[in-house]
Length: 65
Image 1 (spheres, rainbow, N blue to C red):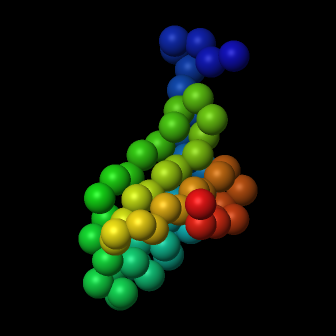
Image 2 (image 1 turned 30 degrees about the horizontal axis):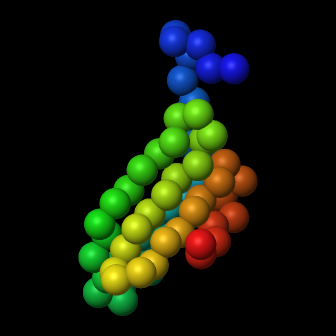
């Protein structure tokens, strides 16, 4: 359980994966509409383009939803 004084931060693997994914989207001229870090689960969610949804868990192994 998450206490009020303790928060979850993105892992190094997540931040590196996020950088690669955002660069890939930018290279493809896709707009990033939503970028969200879920402090309870520790996942990063990215909504881009018309229908691209990407999840980046703490392991850094990103995948499409």
